[in-house]
Length: 371
Ligand code: SF4
View 1 (cartoon, helix red, strand yellow):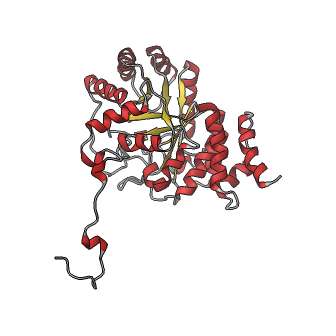
View 2: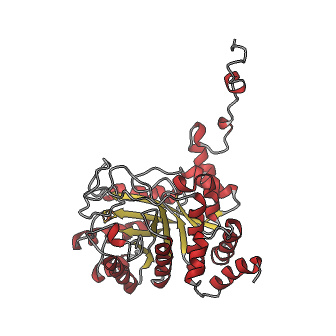
View 3: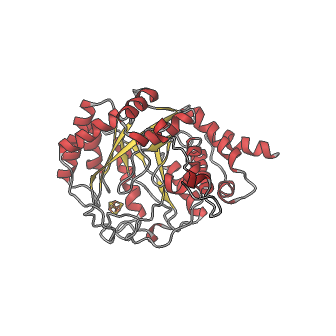
């Protein structure tokens, strides 16, 4: 097989609904002879077939912060974390509904409400169901809830209320799971996904890269998410928040992150693949390339950390020739935001054109003194 045929075979296997051999999958992450650009192109062939050039924008609402009895080592809300986050109990319904309105107006396709904690009580499930009903009645927006471990009856109630998706990340491989959490198991997480699937809720389940996992673990989790038929897969790149338990980071290069996204795309061709938390930190200048394997992004930050603003994210999508999956046009949303933005917030604004001063033009100590 020629090199060209090799890259072509990757998208052909994926589009045929077949899975890559584990050794090929591993090579995509590790083999320096496999070049990034043709790999991204193979992933893009698959992305384009199922998703065209549309990007689904997600805005996350941290509806309750902290107070979690679990010990997920990466999480700033864990009982073991000393990260000094702003803790608060669940927001009022009015506050959550107002944030849903703002997400809709910002062009978000889906509104994600995250409630930290091990899992919701029956009373909490009733409240979440009521919130889902109110949002769905008010806005044409999809709703996703992340609320910890859930049983069959909790999942059924949320489905009845109109919930589109339940987020519950598997995070890492089964073998590596005890290294990142001791208060619940990988199996507990799988059970929650099974309860949601049984009730007919779409599964949003992803992973976090950079927690000390091996490339084999990454392949395992990508295969596992394929097996559970996750319709949405957020790939997070660890943001090491000071005070959290996790001390063993895997160094992540932008190139490796893009290989990971390409692998997940090829193994999960029809899933909505999200370049999620940490894209700014780890992909840096290459983050626009994530749009080739991934068809979904968060904007306006994550649970406890800031990220690129809505204007920056939407402008990046527009600059690369992609569109947004929304009832609104990308230009319409962007123009509205730029009209509301102040000064340098507006991407591409003339306010960003700053003339060099003499000290920038002639920094040498031998230059004549500025007059
Ligand atoms: S259960 Fe959720 S909120 Fe609690 S520590 Fe784990 S990830 Fe954080």
